[in-house]
Image (tube, rainbow, N blue to C red; front, side, top):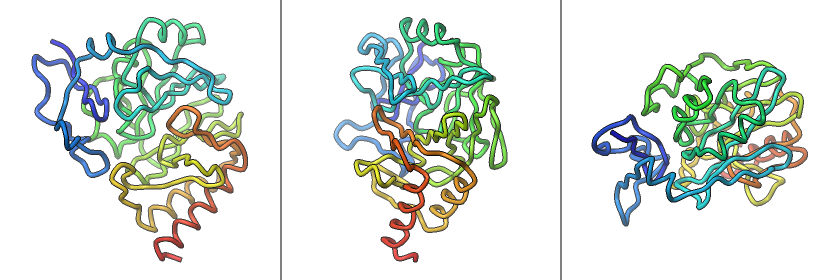
Length: 265
């Protein structure tokens, strides 16, 4: 048996003799099934054979991805703290070069992922490094490959130690979470808060590919969840997408602009 990954979202499914009949994550309106090819599956072996590691510094944090880009194309970030390293978000690729580099940096104490679109090969990573994957309870139904390594938390904040805290913002997904790194005054947001070309602002959406906006209460909830935090820099989901200064103010003014645009203020 092998594991199959969805070509559109990179979610890895449990080992099987044949690919799954559907990808629930891509059938959800926040993602999509390609109109030209329909549902396409890739085996783990095919993915590994056709890609290579892409490891680079991303504004002071080690970024880990693969080349060529696969599916959504996010990169993971290796966050180093006194309580152990945390991999923020996950990717569908893992090879010997990445494993050696992560171990050289001190291994992983945990993996934390912003939302289901980036769960990808999280179980593969958890097994390789002997660490848990920390996800909000509200997203349990979106875990397509169940495993004892996947741990769920409840509530609004969850401390990982070493000045690292997960905050449930909701928005894009009900249990959408961001990672606050107090020591660096940095917020790692995946695309719960999206970095956009104009770095004076950020974006919020229910569905990015299908351009479905969030309602006003969801926007206000995101802002309220982030208000108690101190952060100057905000790291988005993709390589190089970083608000380098004044990030908290960017979140505030972006929410105000968004609410005006949808006629909610």
